[in-house]
Image 1 (cartoon, rainbow, N blue to C red):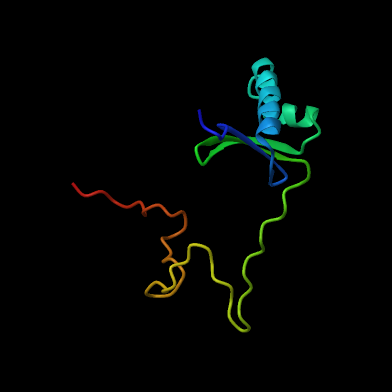
Image 2 (cartoon, one colour):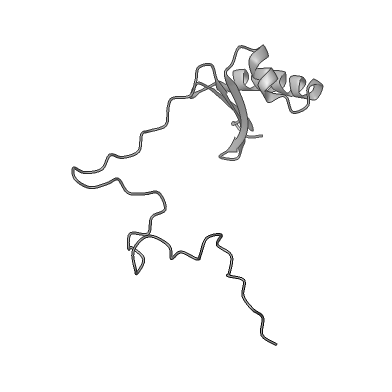
Length: 116
């Protein structure tokens, strides 16, 4: 048998010992058997902000947070005088400017006389 358990858990980013992780997984599994799909209920009942089961490095990982997750990093600021890069922007402008060519109101082809 391996020295390493297949179950792991972290609490606010800090890994729990194998014994603590196994205990948390046991309680989580019991709760989920009785309340199918109610992960938020398990978190609430145990005083956690969130609980997320996931898989990492060949192990089942239960990620537990007791506080709100830290905010995401802000977008990089633009250099002075230049606008910030747009997400998904290609860099080169389209020929003829950046605005699409108007199609005449509704965006549908104009109705006209049909030829036979």
